[in-house]
Length: 329
Image 1 (tube, rainbow, N blue to C red):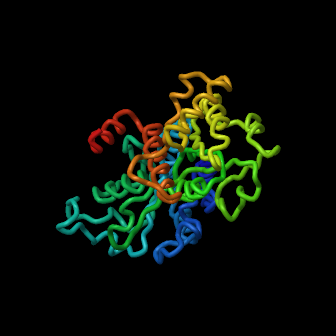
Image 2 (cartoon, rainbow, N blue to C red):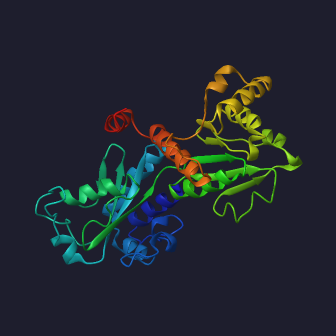
Image 3 (cartoon, rainbow, N blue to C red):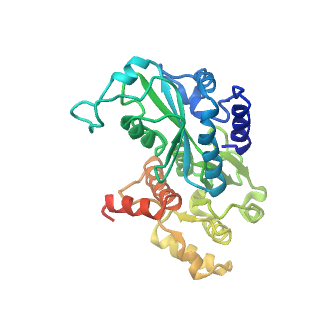
Protein backbone atom coordinates (compact mmCIF):
# COMPACT_ATOMS: atom_id res chain seq x y z
CA UNK A 1 0.00 0.00 0.00
CA UNK A 2 1.23 3.47 -0.92
CA UNK A 3 0.92 6.16 1.77
CA UNK A 4 0.64 8.89 -0.88
CA UNK A 5 -2.48 7.17 -2.23
CA UNK A 6 -4.18 7.28 1.17
CA UNK A 7 -3.11 10.88 1.72
CA UNK A 8 -4.59 11.86 -1.65
CA UNK A 9 -7.87 10.13 -0.74
CA UNK A 10 -8.03 12.06 2.54
CA UNK A 11 -7.35 15.34 0.73
CA UNK A 12 -10.07 14.64 -1.86
CA UNK A 13 -12.66 13.74 0.77
CA UNK A 14 -11.90 16.86 2.81
CA UNK A 15 -12.45 18.96 -0.31
CA UNK A 16 -15.67 17.14 -1.20
CA UNK A 17 -14.19 15.41 -4.24
CA UNK A 18 -14.71 11.80 -5.25
CA UNK A 19 -11.29 10.14 -5.04
CA UNK A 20 -9.87 8.09 -7.88
CA UNK A 21 -9.31 4.51 -6.73
CA UNK A 22 -7.24 2.17 -8.91
CA UNK A 23 -6.81 -1.59 -8.93
CA UNK A 24 -3.05 -1.00 -8.76
CA UNK A 25 -3.53 0.43 -5.27
CA UNK A 26 -6.39 -1.90 -4.33
CA UNK A 27 -5.53 -5.19 -6.08
CA UNK A 28 -8.36 -7.10 -4.39
CA UNK A 29 -10.52 -5.51 -7.14
CA UNK A 30 -8.24 -6.47 -10.03
CA UNK A 31 -9.41 -8.66 -12.89
CA UNK A 32 -7.11 -11.42 -11.65
CA UNK A 33 -8.42 -11.27 -8.07
CA UNK A 34 -12.07 -11.17 -9.10
CA UNK A 35 -11.88 -13.73 -11.90
CA UNK A 36 -14.76 -16.19 -11.65
CA UNK A 37 -16.62 -14.10 -9.05
CA UNK A 38 -19.98 -13.19 -10.55
CA UNK A 39 -20.65 -10.70 -7.76
CA UNK A 40 -17.46 -8.66 -8.06
CA UNK A 41 -15.34 -7.12 -10.81
CA UNK A 42 -12.94 -4.16 -11.12
CA UNK A 43 -15.77 -1.73 -11.91
CA UNK A 44 -17.07 -2.04 -8.35
CA UNK A 45 -14.15 0.09 -7.21
CA UNK A 46 -15.93 3.06 -8.83
CA UNK A 47 -18.97 2.36 -6.62
CA UNK A 48 -16.75 2.29 -3.56
CA UNK A 49 -15.21 5.63 -4.51
CA UNK A 50 -18.60 7.22 -5.17
CA UNK A 51 -19.88 6.11 -1.76
CA UNK A 52 -17.01 7.73 0.17
CA UNK A 53 -17.63 10.98 2.05
CA UNK A 54 -15.77 13.16 4.54
CA UNK A 55 -17.09 10.82 7.25
CA UNK A 56 -14.64 8.21 5.90
CA UNK A 57 -11.60 10.40 6.55
CA UNK A 58 -10.93 8.88 10.02
CA UNK A 59 -10.78 5.41 8.44
CA UNK A 60 -8.02 6.42 6.05
CA UNK A 61 -6.21 8.49 8.67
CA UNK A 62 -6.17 5.46 10.97
CA UNK A 63 -4.73 3.44 8.10
CA UNK A 64 -1.99 6.02 7.62
CA UNK A 65 -1.12 5.93 11.30
CA UNK A 66 -0.95 2.13 11.19
CA UNK A 67 1.54 2.34 8.34
CA UNK A 68 3.66 4.86 10.25
CA UNK A 69 3.64 2.60 13.32
CA UNK A 70 4.29 -0.62 11.41
CA UNK A 71 0.98 -2.04 12.61
CA UNK A 72 -0.35 -5.30 11.20
CA UNK A 73 -3.48 -3.85 9.65
CA UNK A 74 -5.77 -3.85 6.63
CA UNK A 75 -8.28 -1.75 4.75
CA UNK A 76 -11.42 -3.80 4.20
CA UNK A 77 -14.30 -3.40 1.79
CA UNK A 78 -17.95 -4.33 2.17
CA UNK A 79 -19.33 -5.13 -1.28
CA UNK A 80 -23.10 -5.27 -1.71
CA UNK A 81 -24.72 -6.89 -4.75
CA UNK A 82 -28.22 -7.33 -3.30
CA UNK A 83 -29.06 -4.82 -0.57
CA UNK A 84 -32.26 -6.53 0.57
CA UNK A 85 -30.56 -9.93 0.91
CA UNK A 86 -27.57 -8.39 2.66
CA UNK A 87 -29.74 -6.90 5.38
CA UNK A 88 -32.29 -9.72 5.68
CA UNK A 89 -30.16 -12.85 5.67
CA UNK A 90 -29.22 -14.30 9.08
CA UNK A 91 -27.25 -17.26 10.40
CA UNK A 92 -28.73 -20.73 10.32
CA UNK A 93 -28.47 -23.38 13.02
CA UNK A 94 -25.04 -24.53 11.87
CA UNK A 95 -23.20 -21.22 12.16
CA UNK A 96 -22.68 -19.16 15.27
CA UNK A 97 -25.57 -16.86 16.18
CA UNK A 98 -25.03 -13.14 15.80
CA UNK A 99 -28.56 -12.03 16.51
CA UNK A 100 -31.42 -11.64 14.10
CA UNK A 101 -29.97 -8.67 12.21
CA UNK A 102 -28.19 -9.11 8.92
CA UNK A 103 -25.83 -6.44 7.64
CA UNK A 104 -26.32 -2.98 9.16
CA UNK A 105 -27.22 -1.50 5.76
CA UNK A 106 -27.09 -2.20 2.04
CA UNK A 107 -24.35 0.25 1.09
CA UNK A 108 -20.65 -0.22 0.33
CA UNK A 109 -18.26 0.50 3.19
CA UNK A 110 -14.52 0.94 3.64
CA UNK A 111 -13.18 0.05 7.09
CA UNK A 112 -9.92 -0.32 8.98
CA UNK A 113 -9.07 -3.41 11.03
CA UNK A 114 -5.82 -4.48 12.69
CA UNK A 115 -4.41 -7.49 14.51
CA UNK A 116 -5.91 -6.20 17.76
CA UNK A 117 -9.31 -6.27 15.99
CA UNK A 118 -9.73 -2.52 16.31
CA UNK A 119 -12.31 -1.47 13.72
CA UNK A 120 -12.72 2.07 12.37
CA UNK A 121 -15.54 2.81 9.94
CA UNK A 122 -17.81 5.71 9.03
CA UNK A 123 -20.96 3.76 9.93
CA UNK A 124 -21.85 1.43 12.78
CA UNK A 125 -21.61 -2.22 11.68
CA UNK A 126 -23.94 -4.94 12.87
CA UNK A 127 -22.57 -7.82 14.97
CA UNK A 128 -22.61 -10.01 11.86
CA UNK A 129 -20.72 -7.34 9.91
CA UNK A 130 -18.07 -7.26 12.63
CA UNK A 131 -17.70 -11.04 12.39
CA UNK A 132 -16.97 -10.77 8.68
CA UNK A 133 -14.82 -7.63 9.01
CA UNK A 134 -12.49 -9.55 11.31
CA UNK A 135 -12.42 -12.63 9.11
CA UNK A 136 -11.74 -10.88 5.82
CA UNK A 137 -8.75 -9.06 7.33
CA UNK A 138 -6.91 -12.06 8.71
CA UNK A 139 -6.59 -14.43 5.80
CA UNK A 140 -6.68 -11.89 4.18
CA UNK A 141 -10.00 -13.41 3.17
CA UNK A 142 -12.07 -15.95 5.07
CA UNK A 143 -15.83 -16.48 5.08
CA UNK A 144 -16.26 -13.53 2.73
CA UNK A 145 -18.93 -15.42 0.78
CA UNK A 146 -20.77 -16.81 3.79
CA UNK A 147 -23.94 -14.72 3.50
CA UNK A 148 -26.15 -13.79 0.57
CA UNK A 149 -26.28 -10.30 -0.87
CA UNK A 150 -22.77 -9.15 -0.02
CA UNK A 151 -19.13 -10.14 -0.04
CA UNK A 152 -15.94 -8.72 1.45
CA UNK A 153 -12.37 -7.96 0.36
CA UNK A 154 -9.26 -6.43 1.89
CA UNK A 155 -5.78 -5.09 1.17
CA UNK A 156 -2.89 -5.19 3.65
CA UNK A 157 -1.26 -2.00 4.90
CA UNK A 158 2.08 -3.79 5.31
CA UNK A 159 4.61 -5.15 2.85
CA UNK A 160 4.86 -8.75 1.71
CA UNK A 161 7.57 -10.89 3.25
CA UNK A 162 10.28 -11.56 0.67
CA UNK A 163 11.46 -15.15 0.20
CA UNK A 164 14.82 -15.72 -1.46
CA UNK A 165 15.19 -19.06 -3.23
CA UNK A 166 18.90 -19.73 -3.63
CA UNK A 167 19.01 -22.19 -6.50
CA UNK A 168 16.58 -22.77 -9.35
CA UNK A 169 16.01 -26.44 -8.56
CA UNK A 170 12.79 -28.33 -9.27
CA UNK A 171 11.85 -27.97 -5.60
CA UNK A 172 12.50 -24.22 -5.82
CA UNK A 173 10.17 -23.94 -8.81
CA UNK A 174 7.38 -25.61 -6.83
CA UNK A 175 8.13 -23.49 -3.74
CA UNK A 176 7.98 -20.30 -5.84
CA UNK A 177 4.50 -21.06 -7.14
CA UNK A 178 3.09 -22.01 -3.77
CA UNK A 179 4.80 -19.18 -1.85
CA UNK A 180 3.43 -16.65 -4.33
CA UNK A 181 -0.03 -18.15 -3.93
CA UNK A 182 0.01 -17.60 -0.17
CA UNK A 183 1.24 -14.02 -0.40
CA UNK A 184 5.03 -14.02 -0.31
CA UNK A 185 7.19 -11.95 -2.65
CA UNK A 186 9.56 -14.43 -4.28
CA UNK A 187 13.07 -13.89 -5.66
CA UNK A 188 14.99 -16.80 -7.20
CA UNK A 189 18.77 -16.73 -7.67
CA UNK A 190 20.93 -19.03 -9.81
CA UNK A 191 23.82 -18.78 -12.27
CA UNK A 192 22.22 -20.78 -15.10
CA UNK A 193 19.83 -18.75 -17.22
CA UNK A 194 18.23 -21.90 -18.58
CA UNK A 195 16.96 -22.80 -15.11
CA UNK A 196 16.10 -19.26 -13.99
CA UNK A 197 13.54 -18.94 -16.75
CA UNK A 198 10.17 -17.26 -16.90
CA UNK A 199 8.60 -20.61 -17.73
CA UNK A 200 9.88 -22.13 -14.48
CA UNK A 201 9.38 -19.02 -12.34
CA UNK A 202 6.64 -16.97 -14.04
CA UNK A 203 5.76 -14.73 -11.08
CA UNK A 204 9.09 -14.48 -9.27
CA UNK A 205 11.84 -11.91 -9.51
CA UNK A 206 14.75 -13.67 -11.22
CA UNK A 207 18.45 -12.97 -10.67
CA UNK A 208 21.08 -14.63 -12.87
CA UNK A 209 24.55 -14.59 -11.31
CA UNK A 210 27.58 -14.25 -13.61
CA UNK A 211 30.57 -16.54 -13.60
CA UNK A 212 28.95 -19.96 -13.60
CA UNK A 213 28.84 -20.14 -9.80
CA UNK A 214 27.47 -18.38 -6.70
CA UNK A 215 30.50 -16.13 -6.04
CA UNK A 216 28.60 -13.01 -7.18
CA UNK A 217 25.92 -13.67 -4.57
CA UNK A 218 28.12 -11.62 -2.23
CA UNK A 219 27.17 -8.53 -4.27
CA UNK A 220 23.43 -9.07 -3.60
CA UNK A 221 21.77 -7.82 -0.41
CA UNK A 222 18.63 -8.89 1.41
CA UNK A 223 16.79 -7.24 4.29
CA UNK A 224 16.89 -8.54 7.89
CA UNK A 225 13.17 -9.35 7.72
CA UNK A 226 13.57 -11.56 4.62
CA UNK A 227 13.40 -15.37 4.49
CA UNK A 228 16.03 -17.47 2.70
CA UNK A 229 15.57 -21.02 1.38
CA UNK A 230 18.82 -22.70 0.30
CA UNK A 231 17.76 -25.05 -2.50
CA UNK A 232 20.70 -25.09 -4.93
CA UNK A 233 20.69 -27.66 -7.70
CA UNK A 234 22.51 -30.78 -6.54
CA UNK A 235 23.28 -28.95 -3.27
CA UNK A 236 26.50 -27.79 -4.94
CA UNK A 237 26.34 -24.24 -3.63
CA UNK A 238 24.50 -24.77 -0.36
CA UNK A 239 27.53 -23.62 1.71
CA UNK A 240 27.69 -20.30 -0.16
CA UNK A 241 23.96 -19.86 0.31
CA UNK A 242 24.08 -20.50 4.06
CA UNK A 243 27.06 -18.19 4.57
CA UNK A 244 25.40 -15.40 2.58
CA UNK A 245 22.05 -15.70 4.39
CA UNK A 246 23.58 -15.68 7.87
CA UNK A 247 25.90 -12.76 7.05
CA UNK A 248 22.86 -10.87 5.76
CA UNK A 249 21.13 -11.58 9.10
CA UNK A 250 18.02 -12.90 7.34
CA UNK A 251 15.10 -13.52 9.67
CA UNK A 252 14.78 -17.15 8.57
CA UNK A 253 17.27 -19.46 6.86
CA UNK A 254 16.44 -23.01 5.85
CA UNK A 255 18.41 -25.63 3.92
CA UNK A 256 17.28 -28.90 2.41
CA UNK A 257 19.34 -32.05 2.78
CA UNK A 258 20.16 -35.19 4.73
CA UNK A 259 22.34 -35.43 7.82
CA UNK A 260 25.44 -36.67 5.96
CA UNK A 261 25.34 -33.88 3.42
CA UNK A 262 24.65 -31.35 6.14
CA UNK A 263 27.80 -32.43 8.01
CA UNK A 264 29.95 -31.61 4.98
CA UNK A 265 28.14 -28.32 4.39
CA UNK A 266 28.70 -27.53 8.08
CA UNK A 267 32.46 -27.94 7.63
CA UNK A 268 32.50 -25.74 4.53
CA UNK A 269 30.34 -23.04 6.15
CA UNK A 270 32.71 -22.77 9.10
CA UNK A 271 35.72 -22.79 6.77
CA UNK A 272 34.19 -19.83 4.92
CA UNK A 273 34.23 -17.76 8.10
CA UNK A 274 30.77 -18.34 9.53
CA UNK A 275 30.41 -19.10 13.22
CA UNK A 276 28.85 -22.09 14.93
CA UNK A 277 26.11 -19.72 16.08
CA UNK A 278 25.47 -18.81 12.42
CA UNK A 279 25.19 -22.48 11.52
CA UNK A 280 22.72 -23.14 14.30
CA UNK A 281 20.44 -20.44 12.85
CA UNK A 282 20.00 -22.54 9.70
CA UNK A 283 16.84 -24.69 9.88
CA UNK A 284 17.81 -28.09 8.57
CA UNK A 285 16.24 -29.85 7.04
CA UNK A 286 13.97 -27.09 5.84
CA UNK A 287 10.20 -27.54 6.11
CA UNK A 288 7.72 -29.33 8.31
CA UNK A 289 8.11 -33.09 8.69
CA UNK A 290 5.33 -35.23 7.26
CA UNK A 291 6.95 -37.60 4.80
CA UNK A 292 7.26 -35.27 1.81
CA UNK A 293 9.40 -36.73 -0.99
CA UNK A 294 8.61 -35.20 -4.40
CA UNK A 295 9.44 -31.57 -5.29
CA UNK A 296 5.76 -30.63 -5.03
CA UNK A 297 5.38 -32.36 -1.67
CA UNK A 298 8.57 -30.76 -0.40
CA UNK A 299 7.22 -27.37 -1.47
CA UNK A 300 4.14 -27.92 0.68
CA UNK A 301 6.35 -28.78 3.67
CA UNK A 302 8.61 -25.77 3.09
CA UNK A 303 5.90 -23.18 2.47
CA UNK A 304 3.89 -24.45 5.43
CA UNK A 305 6.90 -23.71 7.61
CA UNK A 306 7.34 -20.29 6.00
CA UNK A 307 3.72 -19.44 6.80
CA UNK A 308 4.21 -20.45 10.43
CA UNK A 309 7.40 -18.37 10.74
CA UNK A 310 5.69 -15.39 9.06
CA UNK A 311 2.82 -15.60 11.55
CA UNK A 312 5.23 -15.49 14.50
CA UNK A 313 7.18 -12.65 12.89
CA UNK A 314 4.16 -10.46 12.25
CA UNK A 315 1.64 -10.97 15.01
CA UNK A 316 1.50 -9.70 18.56
CA UNK A 317 2.67 -11.83 21.48
CA UNK A 318 -0.94 -12.19 22.60
CA UNK A 319 -2.04 -13.44 19.18
CA UNK A 320 0.91 -15.82 18.96
CA UNK A 321 0.14 -17.23 22.40
CA UNK A 322 -3.47 -17.92 21.35
CA UNK A 323 -2.22 -19.46 18.11
CA UNK A 324 0.28 -21.74 19.83
CA UNK A 325 -2.31 -22.83 22.39
CA UNK A 326 -4.78 -23.69 19.64
CA UNK A 327 -2.09 -25.85 18.01
CA UNK A 328 -1.29 -27.61 21.28
CA UNK A 329 2.30 -26.37 21.18
